[in-house]
Each structure stands twice: as C-alpha cells, then as structure tokens.
Amino acid sequence: MNKRLFGGALGKYLLAILLVCLLVGFFWWKENYGVFGQLAHLTGSTAGDIVFVREGKSGSTNLFLIHDDGTNLRRLTNDPSLKRNPAWNPTGNEIAYAGESSVGGGHTLQIYLLGSGTPQQATQGSIQKDNPTWIMNGQKVAFLTGGVIKVINPNGTGLKQVYPPPIRGGAESTTTNDNAEEDFLLPPIRAYAWDPNGKQIAAIQTTEGQFAPAMGESNWWKTKTSGGSQQNMQYPESAVLLPSMTSKPALIPAGASNHVGIAWLPDGKRLVVALSGAGDMNSLIIHRTDDLLLPMQPLLLAKPYTVAPENPCVSADGTKVAFELWRMSSPDDRQLLGIAVLPTNLPNPIVIKSLKDVGKIPLVLKGEMSDPKWSPDGSKLLYTMVGAGGRDIWVCNADGSDRINLTKGNGDNVQAEWSPTMK
Image (cartoon, rainbow, N blue to C red; front, side, top):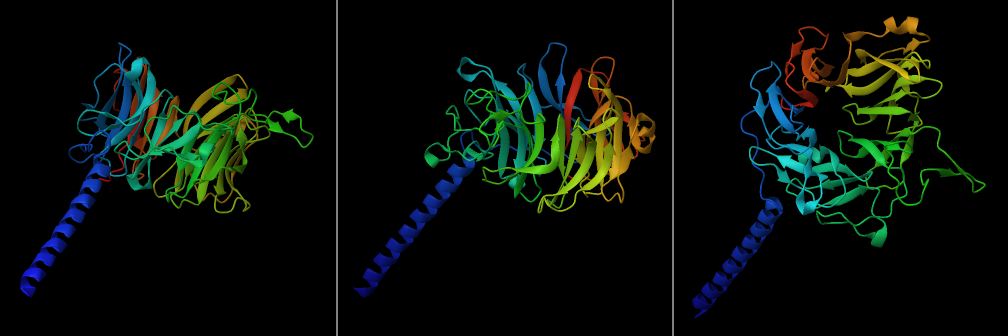
C-alpha cells in the first residue's frame, strides 16, 4: 500500500518536474527564436574580411565582403533597396545594417540583421532607423531613430528606448513598432558610441542646422536664460556623455563646435574628441569620462583657418589615433589633406599657429583619403579614396606603406568596416 502511494507520488513529482522543464525550454526557445526565427551565422571565419556598401551603375546599393588582400569578393545582398551603415557583431558572424523597407506602402529605413541567409527585418514603424551598433557583447543592437537611441534584441524582440528614457506613462516600449512619439525636448543625437564596458554612451547632439529635426515646439533647441528670454546655443554640435538610462546629459568640456567627432579608448574611461570650427581653436583632445573635471589631454591644437581634425579612430590597443586632417583657410575653403596618426600618450600637444606649421603633423596618407579604420590587431589601416569612377576602399600598413585598392573602380564604395575576428 505504502509503496503504491510512494510510487504514485514520485510519478507526479517527476511529471511536474518534466512540465516545468518543458515550460522553461519553451520560453527559452521563444526568447531566442524571436519574431523572425534564429539568424543563421555567416559560414566560416571572417578574420581579415571587410564589409562595405557598393552603389552600382543602376543606383542600387548592396553589401559586399572582401578579404583585406583584395581576394574573395562576395555579394551579401542582391536587391535595389537602399542600404547603409553595416556593423559587425563582436564575434564577426552577423551584420546589422540600415536598409530601406517598403512594407506598408512607405519607404523607410529599418534595421536589418544578416547572417548566411536572407536578411531579416528587425524593426517596424514609420520613423527612420539608422546607425546600428552591437552592444553588451552582442546581446543588443542599438540604433538611432528620430534623434533618440533605442536598443533591440538580435532576434527582433525587446525594443527599448534608452536615451532619453520614455516619459509618457512612465513605461518603456516593448514592441518592434515605434510609431508612437515619446515626449522629447532634448537636442537630437546625430551619432553615438557605447564605451567598451557598456556603461556610458558618448554622443554628438545637434542643436541647429540641416540635421536637426524640428521636434516639439518651434525653435525648441534654444536655451532659456535666467530672464526667461531665449538664446541660440553657440555651436550646432556638441559632445555629451549619456550615462545609461539617464535623461540629463553631461556636456563634455570644450566639446562644442561646427563638427564634432568622438572615439573611445579601450579602457572605457577616456574619450577622444575632435573639434572642427570651434571658434578659438580646432583640437583633438582626450577627456577622462569618469571625472570630467580632471585636466584634458590635448594632442593637437590648431588656430582657426589653419587645419582641423575630423573622424577620429582609436586602435584596438589604445596607443594610436588616426584621423582626417583638413586644411581650412576660410569657412568656405576646405581641403582634405589626408590621414594623420598620433600616439595617444603624446607628452605635449602639437600646436599649429599658421598653415606653415602643418608639416608638424605626421600624415601617413596624403590626398583625398578619408574614414580611417584600424584593423583588429592595429597593423593596418582601412580608408576610402576618391577615384575616377567613384570612391574605392583601400588598405595599407599602419605607416601608410603597401597600399592595396580592394575595389578597383567598380562602383561607388563606402562605409567599410573590418570584421572584429582576429587572424
């Protein structure tokens, strides 16, 4: 009798445990499967591979992969819709990009995820999405939409606005459709970069000009004075620090100009800020983000209408920063001189008082070379150069030697990105 009761109870316990396991397994599968199924990874190693956007003669844009020695060119997409800003996940086996979607009769940029199969649309809605970035070691994909920063899971679920936090109703959106507008009266974000530790966001906010969408009241980007009147902010762009889930950005000292560029050092506590057209001085400066009151470390200081640094990029080991160098003899007279490289531990800044001093800046590439990107091991530079038939993607050693034209005049090639996979 007791044995039968014990056996019956044991069977019930085992059945209950089995049901719990099945439920846990189902919810795990559901969370990973997402809204479009699991994304198949790119096959094989992508070490040394570079993804880029090519516009063909017909005007269509597609993503391509090529090895850094110019071999093994592969087309990743094959349709006429607009595509831009590809971004690798940290393991180098998936790519996020902004692509044009015609779902619902309109044409808006949405975030797509691409592995070895068909690209999967991860977002919906009528507002443009752009500038995807993988964060939190690939657990999330961040993007810009309407001047705010949002994140989504790589399976298309869990949409959340992280800056500024949603105000209306105090709730965060959890769907993939973001047609609803949140209360937002802060300057829109033009570009952003998560620190390598995933704790802080550095961003470029736009306060006027063609990139500033009119949100809320007219002239909302103006700041109120103590007397209640309004006054325009001095520069159209400024560098700000956005602690995660905080609605109060911290203005980075000396971080305002006509053009701002930002790049994190790998320790996640230092940020390179490039300022162009900043009134008294164009500059390349390293800021401590753990304490903005600490002294800045200037690398380059240039008087107005001499030269200006733009688009900085820090090597993976944090020892070097590459950037575009522009000659600026007047507000309307700009010329790209090439790509310069400076050590991040420079003991004294290079000071440019006139165009005669430009030779003090070490140019590793001279001419219309732009958009420098370091290889994962810091031994090579990737850059874009204007050619006869459009822009080409080039690779060279860190000192500018052994230059290779990867795309050889086939189409207009832009927005190249190294795979993070080490060889």
